[in-house]
Image 1: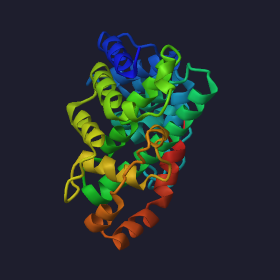
Image 2: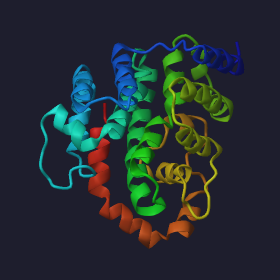
Image 3: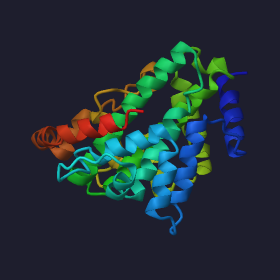
Length: 279
């Protein structure tokens, strides 16, 4: 079976809802579903979050990150952390756990290493997207954070399926970048009930189109991709370093002095958010 047939097979499985997730990811998905209910109460949300230790730890860590803790007062319990963050940010963290855990059931060393590198890249992009949304593109920062978390979901899922389809990791990843990433990604985003606005932003990432001036969620994601200090290992293996040819355009769009100022001023915020996102 060639890679194109593998992509078709994986896409068909995903479209039928046949997703194999670890237990922790399934719990996180239940949290997401509950938070989507307008009748969901803080107490209910806190109890659901507490049912997943990894998610609980990340919720408390995020609540104490510089981006959400303007007062400097440390929080040590889940309920207060949920109140500080709000349901949207907690939902983003639940999605982060789902995304990160997709490749967690693959014990092969190469896949585990790629998955760890991909998540480190994702954490940086997510943190930068949150900052860029507030300081450059002026879109909703919480939505930008969610876009950053979800934008590599197809890569994580591909790594999780490589144990069933070892040919996925043969040769380079150019076919994945050219065909599989978007094809499998669209199916996953649909099954995960990702809002259309977020889907459109991820589509912008797949197409690599950056608007002038940068004003959309897609632009926010592309800027974060270019500025992330850790590149996607999948794109590097495909011979396509993220943001190729984009640096000069960013300098032109924002200005190097302004960009340097933003990055310097937001360094603490990016570092704290990145740390909070490391599952």
